[in-house]
Length: 112
Length: 112
Image (cartoon, rainbow over all chains, first blue to last red; front, side):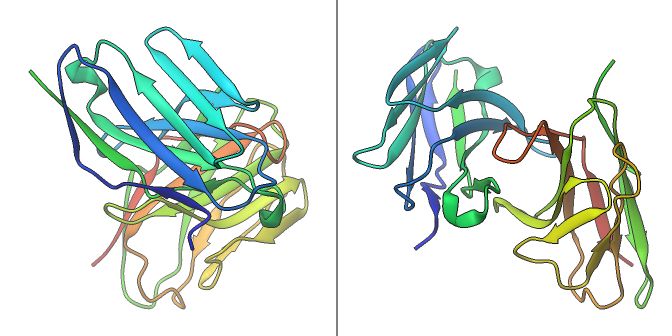
């Protein structure tokens, strides 16, 4: 079992709709979670970090963490074509000696 | 401007050749990392360093070497022992382990 799992997609969402990206993790002791956006051929950039249960909002982005169910999600409201990218979920499980572990990413496509 | 600089952007390696990828940061971060990304895949950790003159192997260290003689610099050498070096290489830094990562722009390495 991978430590961080994501559906590879592609996930296709109409412009203006809500895009929902999901991620599960295997180490129940994980405390830190991150969402990165990566455009093709570019490096990842941090969108959100979340450390406690519940929702965290930043503009059109909302990160949700549920430690009991071991999942973290990213919601993108009012999706724009510029949101089309691969979204990487990452966590820092204690079993990894505090190294950050990445999922394989979900490719998101916003259709006009 | 503070940031992480990777060079070169593109690099070609001949069989049997060692090549070195440069990574410099002026963010005053203690921790630095090297990741490898293959097409359609997530990031896999090659090496990381918490402090100067200390570094640890990641998940795929075989065929690679690093040094950390200065806080700002963390070069990666891809040796001839790495038989499948073609990939996108990303350098990152963070204030400390378990903290959010900031990435350089990446180096695309290809084999001639």
